Image (cartoon, rainbow, N blue to C red; front, top):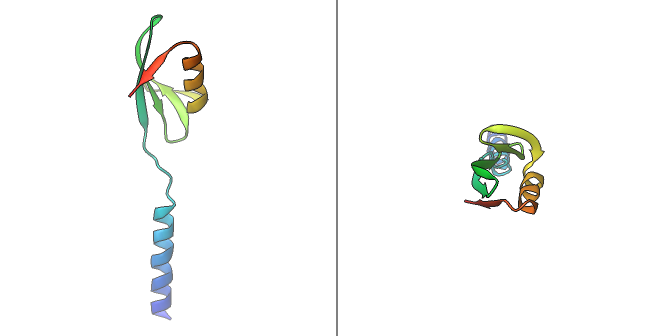
Amino acid sequence: MKKSLLILSAFLSLFVISCKKDDGVSCVTCTSEATTAFELCRESDGNASVNGENTNTPYHVYLSDLEAEGVLCVQ
């Protein structure tokens, strides 16, 4: 019984670890003729932040809008 419980615990631990969402923050530097360079980051919650300020807007939406305005963002 103890061996079964140990195996089940190990399996569940591996399952939780392997399914863990990527909590990393990724950032790019954006520039345009109208603004100075700024940092755009995809936060762990999926929102965009600009120079550390959360925009409460999904990253992909924020980046698409910037690109539509002619802003260039590179890593």
